[in-house]
Length: 487
Ligand code: DUC
Ligand code: ZN
Ligand code: ZN
Ligand code: ZN
Image (cartoon, rainbow, N blue to C red; front, side, top):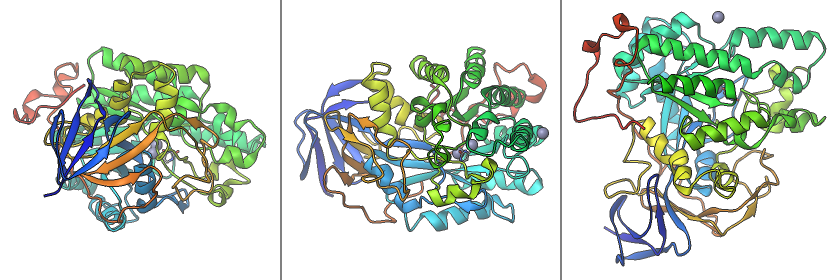
């Protein structure tokens, strides 16, 4: 088997920084040490050697709001690789038949021939019946151990509290992780009608109709439901202090509640909706919307203190033409923005270069914590012997201006246009293959990526929940050989 040595770099993991070479044999990290020899060498002199980024939240080719996200599995995983991300966890949505199993198979059908690097899936629960109950087990058996619940998008994807409670209890039985899109969908729907009736039809209406209070309320409600069901909870796209505060409080009480700010929320603010340029603003319409500086400060503080654990993108790329679907009605602008290629460079520049995060915290938020929470650690998210060789040679001396003109997404714009970033991936390796080399721009073979099954978790909140009658410990199957990573 061919061996490769990543030579002369500084290995930077979630907990350590040290000079070492990394020897790769086939797809796996074989040895970490000094002066290692191999068949081929990859120059890491002057660079960090970090675990490949894992984006826990993408929507590639997702049918949504009457259209389909333009980023394909091929272009998305390629763009990700160029930016130092070696795995994405994409959201499966049930089709017309409502079947979870069919949705997962459909996602395999779309992704398998296209992916340039590895993928995992979450499954969306968009309604509740016996079939959904039964098929949740099939999903877990198929390696999909997390289920997202939309508390918004009334009349489409939104789920009611009783359904969410039933689904969370099912997650608990199965050792799966429930996730929520936390916004009060009933109130959002009313506010959308109100602003439209008042003649506010442009993208600013999107921001007005989804205030942080609605997100905070839903986050609190989801946490209460998770506590009553005795399950951990992962809150996707946390954008504001109100939701962050709910997470902090729950964690302080001992609950395993995880919060995921997006790179967009950390660095772009609500002024993007008020520039008087319809298309500029529409391109930035996503849910929840961008917030003001105080909310951004709260999210940065959460990453620093550990009350928020991971940084994602919610990459849902809709072209300018698709955004025009909402030209007379902001409610019809397809929700979503880009970030898959930019996440690491922007977080490094705005986080590490500013002193807000250490390089180790950067690695934790972009990779290691994701792998732990989603139960694929240390196969992914780690530089240890035996782990997959998903590795990035991260060069803090390559700066670049982000632009639609040089990005790898299919989008005809970039929400980070003009951002000057201070670091880039010199090399990106996926299971030992170099899939990106700075300056070469040669795309790897579509279809070389693999689906990564994620096993069920034994963890639950049973010990600290006060809802004892609902969370009798005997229902929990604990396998002592599969201790939850926990962070
Ligand atoms: N929010 C978005 O902005 N896009 C996709 C789904 C979501 O919840
Ligand atoms: Zn309701
Ligand atoms: Zn969402
Ligand atoms: Zn999303």
